[in-house]
Length: 88
Image (cartoon, rainbow, N blue to C red; front, top):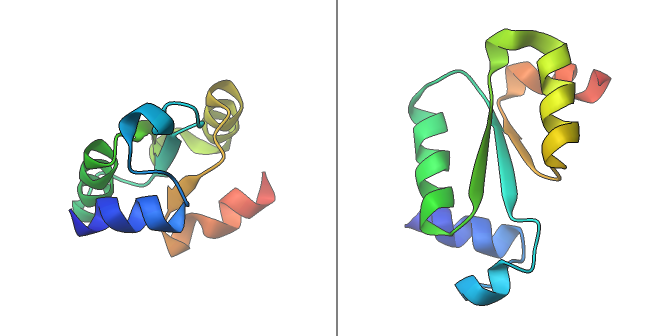
């Protein structure tokens, strides 16, 4: 619940689900399956934010394709993946 509240506040999204639908409310998760992935996904579900899974083992091409096809504006990554993200 705290993650959901933090996401809504950090992203400056309304907590009212009807108003939330007016926004591109997709959040990409570029991470290996782990505790942090699950916590972020659960927070998104509680905040009515659509999760876009970007599998980190598929490489740079898959990352670019996922961002473009889903028009991602927000991507959750770990520090290790940040250099790759910044290079695409």
